[in-house]
Amino acid sequence: MNVVLRADVDGVGKKGDMLQVADGFARNYLIPKGRAIPATAGVQAQAAVMRRSAAAREAREREQSESVARKLVPMVIRIPAKAGPEGRLFGSVSPSDIAEAVADQSETVLDRRSLQIEEPIRSLGAHEVGVKLAGGVEFVLNVEVVKG
Image 1 (tube, rainbow, N blue to C red):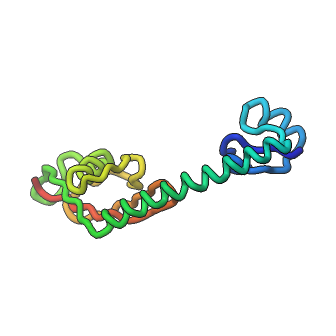
Image 2: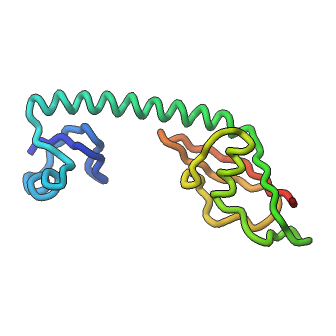
């Protein structure tokens, strides 16, 4: 059965894609959940419009993300934290703290969920934090935790 996806479906396709899927999958899952509609001539034209608008939106998001990356890559974000004499922090530096410091020092708003940090930072010094933005833009943010 030919269907047009109305939403992104993992492992199947993206919104606006016209696909050939098994009849049962379309009738029992995609169409009842509102994730697809049967492909007719009018629907195919509508799908083309959805694909164009999605491509334009993705291009805008990618351009915005690239400009943020160009601004933040050369910077070193300094975060003051209380630490003991051996350099261990009394607390930790979380993604929320990093996002707040980025906003203060560069006037750029980053969502804490875009920061790829496996565990909070618990020591003084330089650290690299991965950042994953919309449009597939990824870069490394240099963070320096200083005694404060």
